[in-house]
Image (cartoon, rainbow, N blue to C red; front, side, top):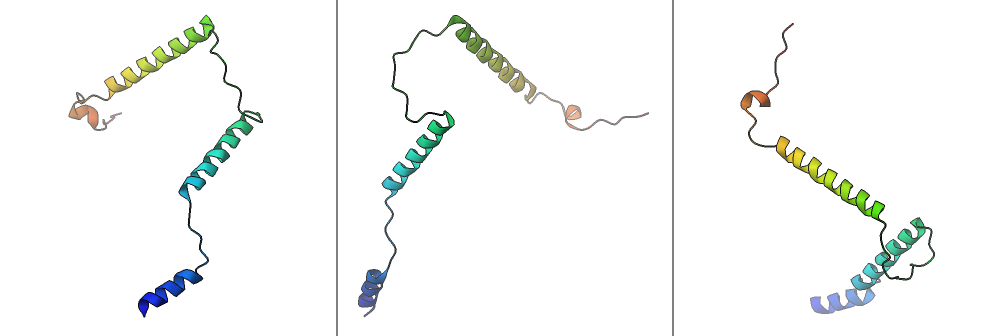
Length: 95
């Protein structure tokens, strides 16, 4: 009797099943549209052969990368466990 009731309730349901592949495809299309809109393009650009990157652009990229690596190294040096207990706690100031 319960099995028949369950069958009837499933047949009366108005819920549709979700197709996650379709949802993912629609989400990717929406994101692609947002990116194109942000770039003020109506369609994706045609793939082209990589042109020669100017020396100034490469030099700027490399110097920025080196600077970031230096800053990262300095940050790691400041976070070592060598700090003593007196450096950990606040210091008192006497006037």
